[in-house]
Length: 506
Image 1 (cartoon, rainbow, N blue to C red):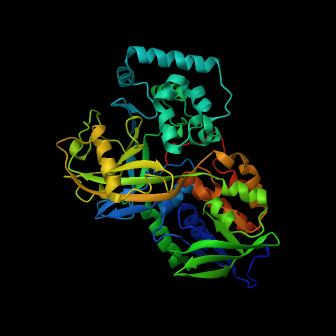
Image 2: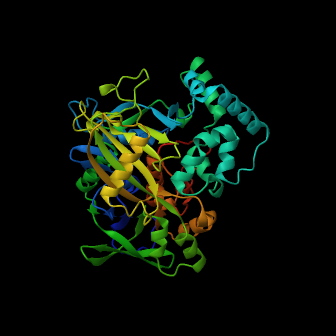
Image 3: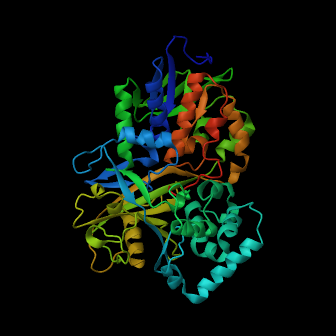
């Protein structure tokens, strides 16, 4: 192994990993199973595993923070999931991946539309003749007169036409990010909806008619996905257990605050734990913490680089779990569900009368997420906020009143529905945003690459809207880099930049 001049001199090298989310835990597990001469220490700021992919257990009802479909085109990732959750009978085994049917729809103008938009008769019936004609001509205009893709608004209009964009993308995107789409870099769309467009939907329809076994399906058009029996956090709890069994150390409630950089390497990491500060030497530092906080903790950072990092924006997330006796929404689909509730995993809310961005129905993610599946429906109301704003500072009682009032307004519950319980959860820096100093992200990335024993992985570690599989692959590439002694970071930073791969998950 190539010596990198880190903080220890013994034969056994020390890897300090920041964060016990998908990227951090994957890196720890891979290092421990692939090398016998690297000591692994994981520092996790919170008291739970999984980061945004955690599962919250509230009185026997489980909440998935943001909704996480387990679907990947990457064989290594699928094999990894199968290895962690090998069970096949969910009624007899706990460590099992369920196969779930994907249903996600848009609630617009009190009507359900498929997401992604489909060409089913229901779509045109909901729109009405006049609206359908306007949509068609708007899309034709977008085909003939392409706009420069210098912002997210133009990106969407080029693929869907201005009319569909205004109906199904404009308000939701502004609600999600707190900025109008014309203020957001188009690269967000390039990562999240690369191949999705009206043309992709048309191709998919004909692909089903003239189906071939090896036909390529756009990721946002998948119909099935995997899901851990007890939610995404289950996978990371199992991974953490295996890390400990393999000799790795995981320190919870440990916030990394300082990085001593000298001679192009990080010599040591300082973290706060139990009211004090602890400094640990490091040969390798694998960081999944937000770049803003990472750079803020480094010494001797050039002023322009520090300014870019400090200006990186994020969007935070709040969800209200609401346990109800029943939903007012009627299941008009052909999909059978327990209690005949609507079959959606989540529903995008495009109604400008409410602040809610999306709601989940946990019963449909996994029947094991709900304590009393036969008699209750457990839903999660999702709000995209900024830490410290009026919503973030609401008490749980205030937030509950807001959420319940909005689902009543939307007709999700009615006078015959009984609200049995509520629970509020918050997630900081859930979504790295693509505006403000993000325009200078390449300069910041180059600086981080110049620190020879630093590896940035995962969603916040790269300030990139990665999915679980992408975050894991950044760690796969990092471990390969460490074990070969390579100085080339490009494979790590190039994950989720290829044009043919995309997904609209969370």
